[in-house]
Amino acid sequence: MTDTGTDTAETLLARTPTDLYIDGRWRASASGARFDVVNPADGEVIARVADAVPADGAAALDAAVAAAAGWAATAPRDRAEILRRAFELVREREEELALLMTLEMGKPLAEARGEVGYGGEFLRWFSEEAVRIGGRYGATPEGTGTMVVSQHPVGPCYLITPWNFPLAMATRKVAPALAAGNTVVIKPAALTPLTTLALARILAEAGLPAGVLNVVTTTDTAAVSDPLIADPRLRKLSFTGSTPVGRTLLAQAAGTVLRTSMELGGNAPFLVFADADLDAAVEGALQAKFRNIGQACTAANRFLVHEDVADEFARRVTERVRGLPLGDGRKDGTVIGPLIDHRAVEKASALVADAVERGASLLTGGSVVPGPGSFFEATVLDHVRPGSRVLREEIFGPVLAIARFGDEDEAVRLANDTEYGLAAYAFTRDLARGHRLIERLESGMLGLNAGVISNAAAPFGGVKQSGLGREGSREGIQEYLTTKYSFIPAA
Ligand code: NAD
Image (tube, rainbow, N blue to C red; front, side, top):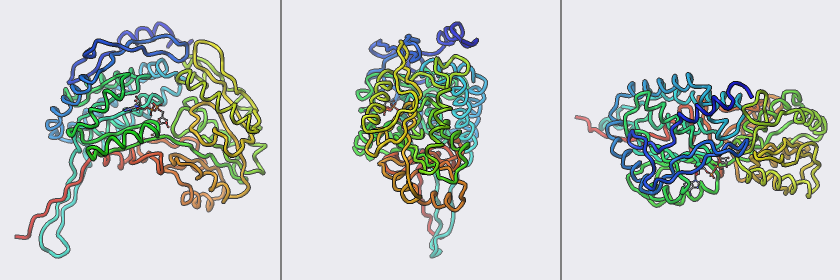
């Protein structure tokens, strides 16, 4: 262990909030209940967090509704300054936020630091966007009067986030919502509530008024969420998580015609053409597959490789994967940390078994690592047969599955053969092919000769059943604004 080992972890956890944050106050849940937060690297309980009941959810929404008019009336520059200060605080606290994420979620510390950088950027980016919310003003074509098009905060928002990027998934919603002048209730995943609570404290220190941001942590998700989503005072639901839960929430949102943004699952194809720079493709593959131990919605799920270079690609990638250090994310050099829980390990194991049964060859890995932590070996499968679960389902684990194609048309057909459409990756030296792929691949995002694509300044989101709406970039703030048209007749 490095110096960020046990002592530092203990002191950090001792000062990390574990209560609900409602109306500017930290408080226990109405029932007094708490739930355990577990470090997936060793199975140890690291915190006991307030377990909200429906009355707490209602109190959080009440606080957000009460604070809405005041916050909407704040000068954009003042909102921007608060977000900017929060960005500075996140940057100052890089080490402790990174360690907190490694402790509650398992990712290697180096990656957790990367997430602090990426997650913090949304605070900076939207602090800059807060003062650029514009409108239009102009004559009607007939000269009968003036049209004014203005933009306004949508109103109280409910933000639901997953466990895999505890900081970035929160800031990607909170920052644009607040920048646009909305108040929010945020519900992090029960597996990783601590980072969101730490973020709430940072925003409070940065000067965010009481009630503007409220945090509800709970294991009784539907009981707490359903009444909020049904409440007509709620004006926006923004969700990041799995497609099945997204579908349920969309159906619920229909009840009040609630505006929604949905960042859902993915099944990203990673195409390697015969003309690709294979060194770059292998490097990109390692990033796109093993970042966050494969637990990213943008993770490459299906490696589709041209038959002329597939053997060589498989050989090189396997050589690299064999050397990836596995262990506690706090240990220097770890690349393969634990999966989020034992269920995730069982799923990875079942997907590998299914692929092998259907004829895939196992080039390395494939086993559950015994112990209290939830580890699965970094794995490479080759000659994965069509119909294998590993090609159809989101793997969310360190399993790299290779299948082959013969020409570009087949590659595109295979790549698009999924209900998902979030990220895609393609490695080719042919510029014309690159342009064709932008047109032909059904995805919201494409890495062309790149294994990592996320950027706060870029619109993140999917097509098909990967979701609705975009986060980050100029588009991100639009999700939290409503457009109003006013007409003033000519005098
Ligand atoms: P999940 O859908 O199980 O849970 C996500 C969040 O929804 C959690 O906070 C959970 O408590 C909450 N939730 C679950 N059921 C709910 C209900 N009935 N009502 C209200 N809230 C409910 O997903 P997960 O396992 O936490 O995260 C992994 C999934 O998230 C993967 O599918 C991944 O692709 C997706 N994801 C997508 C993006 C993106 O931007 N598209 C980013 C990260 C993760």
